[in-house]
Length: 91
Image (cartoon, rainbow, N blue to C red; front, side, top):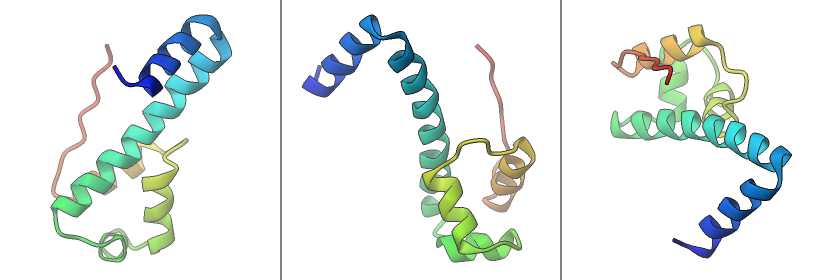
């Protein structure tokens, strides 16, 4: 385990607000990172995806870099534009 992972694990044990904030922020980061990875594997630029969605490149950048409070309907549209289906799993 890396030093960073050790630090995060230890801090989560001792600081509830850090743990809650970290987990929420990490989930938002993962959504944006997954969208970017799928877009890139589809061979699309942010601008090309934006064109497919009738939006601006800045909107795609915001989704990929700050996926906080993104609407479910927006995720569905992005997935569809990338030739994918959105699947939500609650565990």
